[in-house]
Length: 186
Image (cartoon, rainbow, N blue to C red; front, side):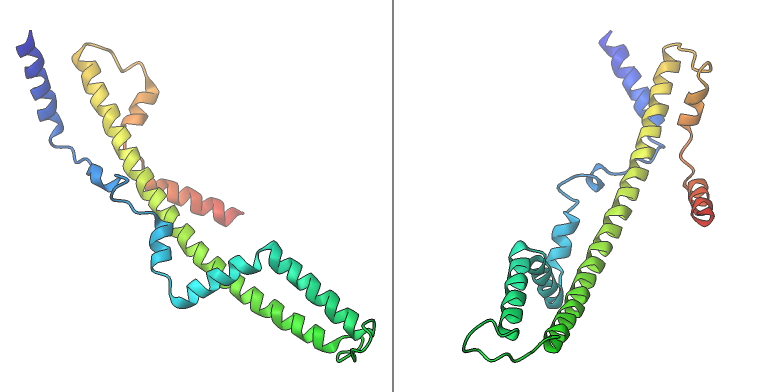
């Protein structure tokens, strides 16, 4: 009985040798580094500076400091502080210019940070697509292996119309065309 099992395994293995399976190392967590960590490691000095600034400007502390700054500025310049001469009287032209320049600098810093985040998101999306494609091939292969085993044990699989579709590799070019058509229509 044990000899029959060994022989069956050898036959099954032999039939599967012609199929190319993606190496497991490609999908192993040990080999796929965190894209975020890798991206952070490769940042330029300017990108590091922008990240620090974005984290600082996006805080409650920064908001509070701005509010305090504006209140103090306006309070001094409307003459409410005795002994302090207003240096930017109403309509606060210098304050307006300062706030405008701050807004420009903050906008640019946020845009730089968003561009970096978008590049990272694109990399993640590409990686997900590659992993999904590999997974789809592997699942299709597993279905084909299961069908071989079912046929070997006498199961009739011709009664399942969905099974034949599942045995076929995914046609990604057809999907790309449909997505492109949908994007053009919208």
